[in-house]
Amino acid sequence: MKRTIYLLATVILTCFSASAQTLSLSTVCIDPGHGGTDPGAVSKDQKSYEKNFTLDIAKRLSDKIKAGYPEVKVVMTRTSDKSVALGDRAAAANKAGADLFISIHINAAAKSGPNGYSVHVLGKSSKKDRDLFAYNMDVCKRENSVILLEDDYTTTYQGFDPSDPESFIFLQLMQNSNLEQSLAFAQLVSDKLKGGPIAINRGIWQDPFLVLWKTAMPAVLVELGFISNSTDLAALKSESNRDKLATRLYNAFKEYKSNYDGTLALDVETQPSGKPSQDTGTQTGTETVQTPPASAEYGIQIFAGSNLLSPKDKAFMGYTPRIVKTGRLYKYVIGVEESAAAAREHLAAIRKKYPDCFLVKIEGDSISVFK
Image (cartoon, rainbow, N blue to C red; front, side, top):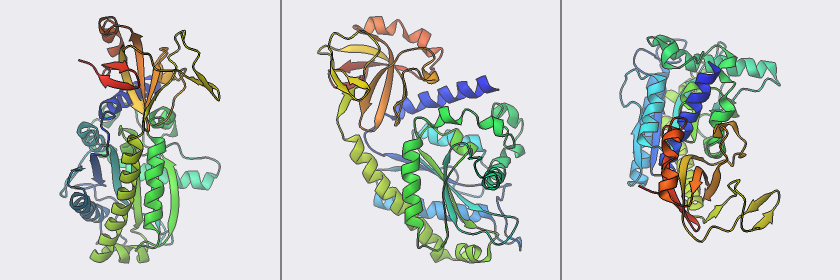
């Protein structure tokens, strides 16, 4: 199982490489939690369903983004009351090459006291506070348990068990490329929701939600109140309050897009490839930033991400990468050669480990896809 999860991690990281070529946040995927035969959390009087609240808020958020940013493509994982498998939700975002994934949910608890909103990014829940860990695992089990409704889910999700903490041991590899941006958006969401219809802020959490686990872009899951709490439920029943919640999520999106687009406009710098250098370069801390070569080089880009990985990271499977920083993205290139023909000879072997890799040209301070 561990090997399967590791290979899945590698595939998802490579999927991100294709969308990393864009220079702005051009596509967002909005995921209304649950739907169809899966109602999600249900109120104590059995009259209110999570699936209906999430769809309404998601549609409102979609409309606001389309009105404010006509150039941004908005993908919805569902637009009606239908069942959508967790894997299909992530697949829709990956297929669209989304730059951001927003999953909207409503929380629930056995007791009526807990209330408030929380924002979640991919990660392994902390065991420092055992009660907190137990709470997080209960929430994750509930949100992930929908996969048990699917036929042959053990094959579909390649060993992911929503009740087994050992299924989450490779989450660190999965989150390397997107955690920084996910946390940045999560912080904006948390801040913008303050003072809104759902009053209590329960903070930002790292948790092993499967729908976040399979996405190949920055992603957050938002729990907008507790359906089991009378105050939160009353707020969610109000159409105007649901619109206010959508507006606050939209305000978080606006600020995140502004920051995202602004950062991607920054310059490019090249990191050492592990090859003997003809130029001593400039020493910066513990790394040497090399002067870009005067002539073009060619190599195979395997993936890209927002965090700088060590050249010895397991994700590189023994290869020593050339690392090119473009704005907030680090692009990882292996099999670097002086000619395109020589680099292309490595492509077939590298594709066996990185199915979505592609040939690139490194010239001066730029990197581009080479056909």
